[in-house]
Image (cartoon, rainbow, N blue to C red):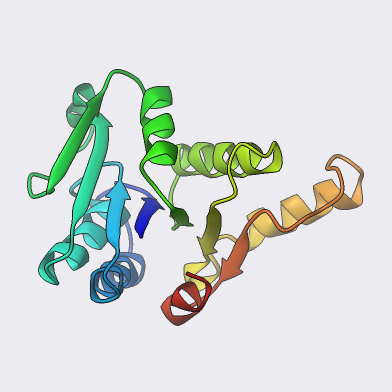
Length: 174
């Protein structure tokens, strides 16, 4: 299975998050899955990719070349797909992945997450989407989504994504 990881590339992340991302990468490889990710060499993306690579797993990076001006790109991917835009990158994530794991991140991660659940809601795919809520990172977002539903801003709530707190829960779903 090709698992797409959404997560920050920031170098300023507390190690409790990046250590968890590294362990997730180790487990992805140990379970025989491949990692599809934004190609960053730092932050959540870089830590997860390193975990996969340290366990002889396969990594596939997808990014526009110019993103290297903002963060270093991973040089050890089995395959690297260069695209022209962030929209094309998101389309390639969908095209090249069987499931999605959302880890802590910033605006780019939220953009990717909300697009992938919107596409699922609109029946453009039926791939598993898992939000890995490391140390309660997404609790406030879940509260906001719940409130949107309570106030009528969301249609009938179907299970568009699953919330997990541990790596074991991820592999129970996948």
